Length: 305
Image (cartoon, rainbow, N blue to C red; front, top):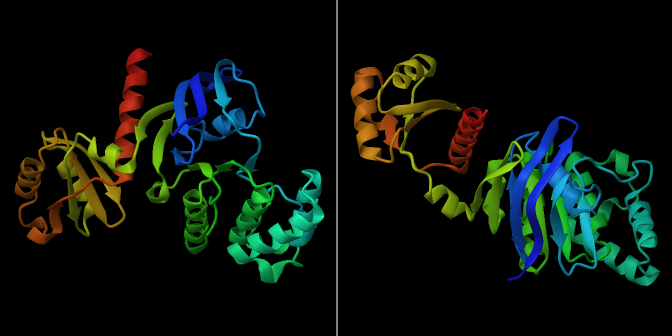
């Protein structure tokens, strides 16, 4: 594969705020690449730079060999007082798609995303998930070689989120290159590769398996109804680096990668407070790994400051 998007030492400042800091990344042709990070990490700024909407403060970004690309922005940007059909007809006319071809594409794409029964409905009357599907269809009307999607499922219900990602996965397998940003760790399961973006810098990049496999800490999961008291007790253990709440469970992170040693230390500290089956060594999730990278990045930034 050849690189379709190449960013080198990319920096973007807005006054005193440095949204991107020396970002270097290469995204290959044919990839479904996910950019993961919290609000304010710099994801939207990177998308605006790739799309050519703004100029970097320093560094460069190149999009190689792409005649057309589609963009699905974070906020719904189609006309809410027009119907689905009218929005897509306008999109086709703006990009000089011949009427006959536009008619065929509209029918095919709406059927594919399940919106063909709603062609005469105003865009403003659509649900959040339906709006995002319409935005996707609009971006695909020009048959782009590259599709940029900036947090396309934020605020969308879980079922619609999954349906949307199934569509993206299908497009990826058909050869389309996709760059998608998301704050949701579970959505990374569909990506060829992913990168963690935190405070304007890449903290990890690779396949999901490689990033999780490089995690250097052991994890132990504890299930208990008395989580807050146990959390304080476990956090004081010498072999424990951090204790985090994950729903009804505690994730206990060790200072080393030795799972059996951490498990023994946790069990000894808890005694009869929990059952033997409620404490186990846990394979790290992508969220565990992201939190650890974010903490490491914050410590490094503080040390430099």
